[in-house]
Length: 470
Ligand code: GDP
Image (cartoon, rainbow, N blue to C red; front, top):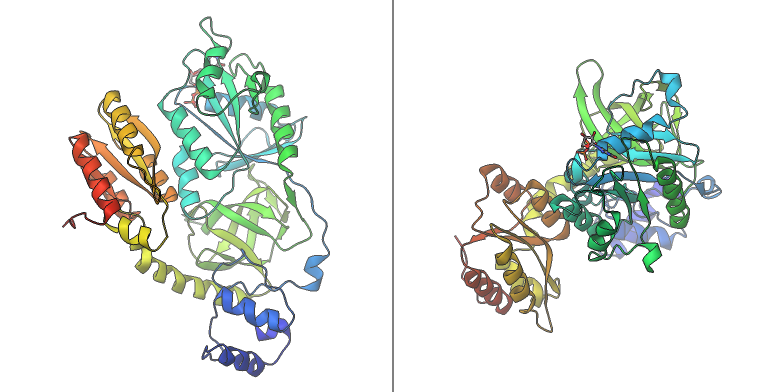
């Protein structure tokens, strides 16, 4: 910190002592302390880069850049068989750059399409699980969601799930009503059904853009791409290519020949060969980069999905990737981060649970008890949701975040984890795998056979009278 501010270390230590922090030369200080100290010396600390130790002080040359529009980053979601893959394939065929690579696209979890309407980056992670997993790590990489709904089938379970995930993350939704070529296609029915979820079409006085498509007959794809650009413009997505790169990991793995490799989505700045970086709790130097078509590249700008080699370990999806000035900095930050990771693992028990509800309410930490419900039959869901919401008091609101018939899914756990919700199941038995995931994510998962018992537990928890469970 002292070096970056070009002041003597002893001066910083003296200031720290003034704040009651006994520090040595090589000690890591947290962001709040670093901010206080830096402000005292007339510097500004750039937050959000490394929450733990935001010692990326704004250099003079870092400030002068110019922000420009960057391409939108899009995730396609929807019920199985409604045409997600087909729409993505149809979009890919419009790629004016595709021909050069001979049509061979590497699977790196994200790809970039240059269409006549403009550039788009698609994050092609398997389903919403990845989307929510990232969010539970505080990462937001998607600018907008394309919700694919088949015009002959309407809103189904995974459609609702996708809406819940996108809305919980605050990501705007563009609807593609697909399969309009089918005889029994009924786009108006889709619009009516989706309106119940707040997705009211523009021509009905709402704000949601609907595109009618047939991925099979290649109808409406250009309009879809144009509307993506329209939404991107409204969202005013900006980036400054002259800065040091910042991004997020989309996926990562250990490759036999190349060591740890990660697909990184650049969110700001430009990444170059030879740059030193920190990624999650690891560090490294860019040894080689490839684009989504497998071509070697030397630099990558905003919204580009690229594969990076030269990592010291395999990071997690959603981890932050950030270029730092030199190797020493990279190592220091990654060291501090792995320490922090251990601390957080220890503190992970602090998620919401019915047992801790009263305690957290009293501390003012929660004003809302979020619940995800699963039941064997629809009737139970409705009855319980209504009764549970009626338990709301002035101090705490009970809100049903998601409900569905059938067994508790991985996606439920991830949504609960990301949204700090509890899960209640009626006559549905979670599998061992699900229980395991719930305990890893510290999600409170409860099974009941009678509505009354569940309501009773919630009521007691709100009053701080719940018997501890063993
Ligand atoms: P996904 O599971 O959402 O990725 O759905 P797919 O893209 O795999 O499509 C499921 C099925 O629907 C496939 O048999 C597709 O050929 C078919 N399909 C996709 N789009 C259309 C369409 O616009 N019209 C018709 N008639 N069939 C389609």
